Structures are given as C-alpha cells and as structure tokens.
Length: 304
Ligand code: NDP
Image 1 (cartoon, protein in one colour):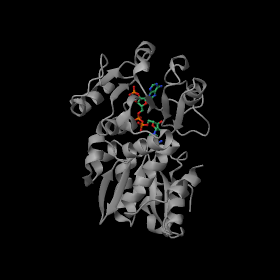
Image 2 (spheres, rainbow, N blue to C red; image 1 turned 120 degrees about the horizontal axis):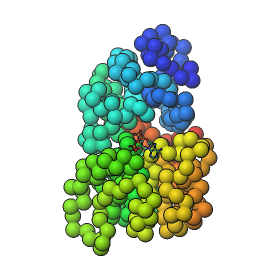
Image 3 (tube, helix red, strand yellow; image 1 turned 90 degrees about the vertical axis):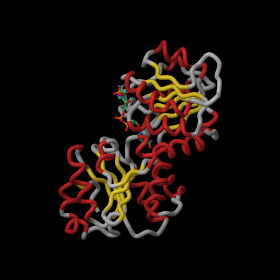
C-alpha cells in the first residue's frame, strides 16, 4: 500500500489496487493530505472490526475532485472522507445529500452505493460528542462563541443551534460571512428564552474590544479557524482576555498545544483539542459506511 495515492492512480485503479492487501475500499481526499490522521484512525477501526479492507490517503487538487469522484463511482469503494478544500464544492457533485449536510452546505463523508454518491456531514455531531467527552457538558446548557465562518464553523454553529444552546456568538475576520451564518440560524433562536441585555444570537467583529465585551457572557469558546495550523500562529483571542470560567476548544489537532490552548491553560481555563472531534466525526463516518458501532477505543488509541 502506498502512503499517498493520486488521481492518476485512481484512474488506473484496477492495476494499482492489485498490489494492496487487504483491498483499499475507503479513503480520504484532500490537498494537502500528508498531514491527515484519518488513515491511521480508520485502518485501526477496520482491523479492530475484522473488516478486510484498507483506507488510503488521496492527494486530489481542488480542480480534480469531480474526476476523482467519477473514478471512485466506478470502483467498488464503500465510501470516502473529504477534507480541505473539497467539503463545500462536493455538495454539488453528489447524487443525494442528507438534510444535515445540505443545511451545513458541506460534505465530509460520502457513501457509495450502486454507483451513487450519497453525501453526509459528521463534523457537527462529532463536535457535540467531543464537547461532552472533554467537558462533561451538553451544548444545550452553554453560551458559545464560535471563531470562524468556514466549513467547520458552519457545522459547529448549526449543531449548537440544533441542540438549543443558550447563546451563540459568531466572530469572523470577514464579518459579512459571520452575519450570513447567524442569519441562516435565526429561526432556531426565535423561542422565548431571555438572557437579559445580551443577544442570544449575534455576529461580532474580529476585534479585541468586541471579544472583551463578550467574555463575561460566554462559557465555551471554539476556534474553528485555520489559525493555529502553523506553529508560529498567534492565539485567535489575546491571552489577556481569557478567564478561568471558560472552556476553550481548539478544533486544530497539532502535535503540541496551539498558542490558544497554551494561553487558556495559563489563564486557568479548561481546554480540549481537535483530536476528540476528529475521533467522533470519524466514528460517525464509520457508522454510515458499515451500519454498526465504531470501535472507539481502537480508534482513540491509534490517534494517541
Ligand atoms: P475553511 O477554509 O472553510 O475556513 C477557514 C476559516 O478560518 C475562515 O473562517 C477564515 O476566515 C478563518 N481564517 C483563516 N485564516 C485566518 C486568520 N489569519 N485570522 C483569522 N481567521 C482566519 O476551513 P475549515 O472550516 O474546513 O477548517 C477550519 C479549521 O477547522 C481547520 O484548522 C481544520 O483543521 C479544523 N477542523 C478540524 C476538524 C476536526 O475533526 N478536529 C474537522 C474539520 C475542521 P475568513 O472567512 O475571514 O477568511
């Protein structure tokens, strides 16, 4: 089995795949893809479940997604995961999209059945399970600030809204995108809950003064931006604003703590990192492909 396959491998898959045992019938498509932990986690799940298949990594450029999916459709793949930059463009390339993926506007899991591509999104539910595991709380009880308005932030914000969180604030560098996201969620917040002077649903500017004003009325802050992917990235919220009452969740899973997580620990806040979300979104994908519970312990062990 090669560490990374390409579009041209997929296009001559019968010849390439002959060499792989067990056969590769699942995988993740992305660009870049070398950093992905999914192959290691999903191969551990397949082994633990005694399913004689393997999960590969596919380096697929943004413009090649359609060709890659057309090749997959003709092979006996069970399904694939999608990561940056494919989640949003994939929506238009599916034969069928489930309600949640349609509402998020992004697909992270595809199931292939009789040559048909069915799109799902497990990021939001995976996030909710991660928060329960990390902090032993439900989103329903929380006042949440989501940083970002891209694919991950959209899945997370929708999940918070669906679970009837107390309060949802969205901050994004491009404020217009944060506004669009909150407007799309407004119907979830039309109920009678009253929170005094602060709004239950709000988009705010990416500015220290705006963050400072919010901190006292928040329980959970989620970094769903790509800030932190590089070691030199600063924390999205200045360390001086963080306080011990906060739970800080960084969706980024780097080899060491991100600047955000380090600053939060320093401030006495509770923290969690993206490995738990990766685990649970992956377990939910496994359940979609195989219709049975994922072996969480084996998957967790593979990640650690
Ligand atoms: P997108 O490209 O869709 O969105 C990126 C977001 O990051 C945008 O909101 C963008 O803001 C913001 N951003 C980028 N650079 C900066 C910056 N320098 N300062 C402030 N904001 C910035 O990516 P995704 O939503 O798919 O992924 C976002 C993060 O979530 C990634 O780091 C990814 O690793 C993580 N993730 C983790 C998962 C897990 O299982 N743990 C699952 C999915 C994602 P703007 O709109 O202004 O450009």
